[in-house]
Image (cartoon, rainbow, N blue to C red; front, top):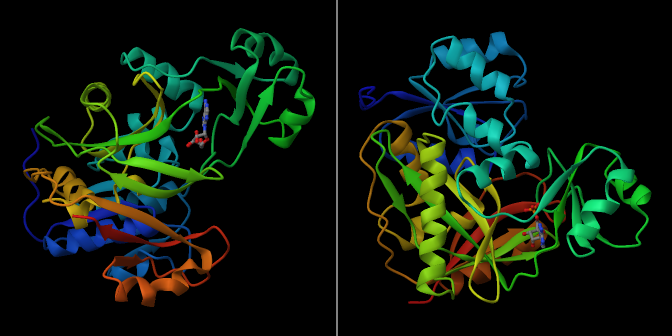
Length: 356
Ligand code: AMP
């Protein structure tokens, strides 16, 4: 067991978007120095930390030199190359939660195979290398499916809905002929996620589960508590625990589910990092996801996740941040990410409304 980091140690974060920014703020509150690493100039995280290295994830010399100056390295971005995390580990840098969660989360076929191995139900799926491989599994799945790129898909990008008889060549063309996965279409009633923290000592804490509303594949709202039965909620928590344990995970992870009409759950994907559907936790709970992740990777005791409020978290996309004044006046708690340009659909901030 590695000793807890001393007060004032340096936490390195791979990735410098809004999640890195909110992790850095939480770390600063606990007295840590934070250093971020990522390729983007003028990033949300770089503007709240004193230390930054701006270089590509594939620049191993740069990343190792940076990592050696940190007491622990974590990540806010699940597409950090596995080779980068492994190179840091091989160079003696403490990386939490390690390279395996990245490896398991980056490729949808590997991810779903791993979830099943953990005893977590997923949609039926098949790896697709060419359009000619779609028809047979699609028929097995009842003629309805979703074709997704195996890698690099996010916010619903890189996916096409299919029904039997569609032009499969055109569908695969729409994904630029990338290696793909065909998933059975799940006729879900709602979507929920579960956020779990696992400490360096293996202790776990699970927040109450949010119900997530997506529009065009992008998360719009998380409402807590989700309207699900106790057994559905328990099942998501059991699954999250099994996953965190199988990964020997240290930190916060999110596991997303479809909930069927009968209350059964089917896992969609997991994110080995703090997650958008947990952005309400700092405003509603004894400990928020960002502080909890920092405590975990520092080897510090986890905080309680007792929830004090029912809440709705809403993402502010593009020029929706122009409504900030009215939201603040109405008593909402707004967090803005400091992004310079409000492109349509871009996550610019979020707002939390306490209902109780
Ligand atoms: P993903 O990129 O996998 O997070 O998918 C984005 C959204 O597409 C999900 O939040 C669902 O609303 C929908 N979706 C993804 N996979 C499936 C599926 N197998 N069946 C039905 N809907 C899906």
